[in-house]
Picture 1 (cartoon, rainbow, N blue to C red):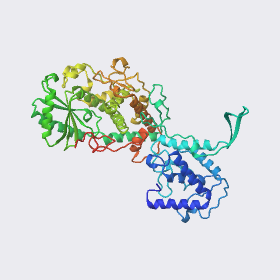
Picture 2: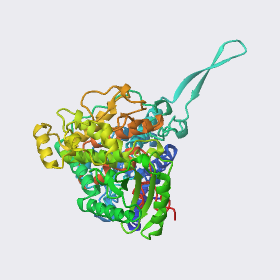
Picture 3: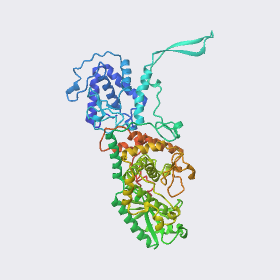
Picture 4: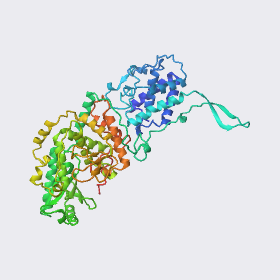
Length: 606
């Protein structure tokens, strides 16, 4: 049983409860009734993200202090006996009346702004406490901490609050009722019986927090699982400048803490150059090029290294890929710096995967993945044109990873798809933050790692002088919204997009759905270099999970907040807050993903 964060604190609360029970026999009855009520409602397990037992004791004490004729005084922890010894109360209400008033008191309590405190007579505001944001706040009188910080989500908090309302409505019903029996008596007349209502905790119709068995999402049922274009998006009041400033700070903190710094990018490039030197001893015409998150401006510190292997003067058709992979794998395994060398030959583009032990890298060498190299250059240009693009892209990617909706293996979107969604939004918002960088002569990009000069001149994003390009476009842009304002707009934008809309970064005008080979369950995302719908990987079930996650995120970030502690990032990007349920947030040091340890990582073959 949870009584406090220390044994001393637990003893103090136990002694306090013993003293208050000695004052009036009704208090003990209410405390026991409240505990039984909490067990019936299944809201008494802090380990399950609900309230600890001590919270219900403090609720009763606080209620009895704030009656019109108080039964208990305000607790004074600075004096011996806590100010209880000389207190006299004139309240003569029956226990049943007090129980009903207790339910009504918390049914109408201002949970949004106020703290339940037994040491203050006047209302205590949440803003006066240095606690992290919480939906329910109950102050421990001795430690001064919030004993209700175990409540994991808004859904759980709302369920706890609803228990007060449902039981109040039940116990408020009149005790007598006239019930007609459908059975006729011997004379053929309907028989009426006058029954005396017997109140019971178990008689109240109370359902636990609804959870869809298909998508494991709190607050929805299976009938609501599938997303429809007509689903209503809640309007939110405009955030105050102080709350918006906190959102801005958190988004910038994500970018600062997780994005690959220039020194690490250079270290990765240096490693690829050394690796190329090693491979050239086997194949003299081999060329290795770093691409993907390591160089596209949106990579995290634990991102894998994606490397493209090509051969100078050779086309893909001229290479025996299977044989080349086997030879390369054999040589990599001979080097003690490389571990877990595997061939993924069934992938769309053959890959050699291995771990580089000294640098703690996970590396993927793919054969002739030329378009991906050019794609990385395009994304990098977008990230450099406006810092808000990189901030939002990294935040969106981080949110998706924390909510476990950024893994194609479980039928959700890839991190790359989320980056395209951010770029598209910043192109479509009015006024635009980003321009539309044209892509012409796709076949040239598909066949050439080094783009011919005449083609390069048509594409601004291939310009090496990015700073000049940035100055040109930023002079044209009139959008002065902060990253936080754009973030809330981004979340709302993708809650309202229906399945007939194509997300494309190739043009400002609407792209017809017929231009894609298939339609998706939620988002139709066009690959800028391929005729491919990246959203088709998402199953109907996971479409609901993604939509609900973005909706939760918008409600979370769009809420006024007074707290300004160091762990504000953990509040906004908490997996429990984003998903509405408890999830394992263990970070794997091998692959950089959440939800499992290094020992259980699928990449760990030891």
